[in-house]
Length: 418
Image (spheres, rainbow, N blue to C red):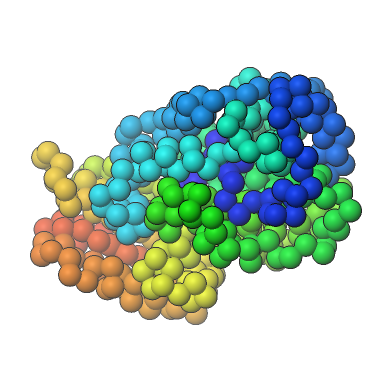
């Protein structure tokens, strides 16, 4: 559930690095800020291969104004009914604690982490007034890329991809990845792109570094922290690969990746490996509160959360071919805590991948539900639907009607990117 609007913001976790910061001259005043923008625009054009059609406005904002912007964008992207459904889903998956207030946590986290942002509506680049002067040029170089991107595609269109979590995540990885890579080249122009370390491998350092200064980030659930980092580091590594393989082209429009599987495995992108779609058949037995998919990256996080093994999580998630889940409100009366059912179908490239996932999910869910109060049960089952290996998870109250007649799906070949 990485939000698409965040593609307009620079998050400070693990970005830039000491080398970039040392190379960035201090920006103290409003005049310095505007001058830095003017001076950097040609370098940003060279780093991205794009030309500015118009100059962005650059403005200062207080930390209170930054928080107000975060709140406005979050609530606009995820209004209360959507938020309630998504929060319930991530609680059922065990990716966030049952007691965590997702809205408050996300707003606190982004307020702490956002070091600057580009607002497409106003064509304005905003820099917080309390930013360390030595970081200002780093922020400007990153946000100028977003300003440039918006002149070639509609950044706000990402928000319109409702309940297409994995596709939005892939698109955000392209936007943030390109901006992350470009900021390095702008601040360190002698740096050769091929000599950079594997950026995704910097993830562990980003997760563990600077927690004294970033207390909200340091105490956030694994899913929130990893989701914040992925677009920048995972996206940058994919964009570096893309620029080498597709010289002179931009990863936008028809070339935009459609899944986090493609971001994580560029060879699958090159081969045109697109996920299949999953469509739930209509049912009158209980109301659907929320529906979406996880995608390969969040499936990795699911295993990492419940099994505590990063390398095993990557193996178990590989071979993903699409997924879809529903949160169903059990019964027709007033909603009660613990009365929701989770139904999750995952599609796999072959029987071997499905078998690994089936066993891994069984272990993970047994651990997740160890000690759960009476009145709930779960089932992990392998199926073959329209010739596709499928694994289905159901976690629901014991009296749920779905235990007698499970919600059905149909598979839409190549339909996961629609």
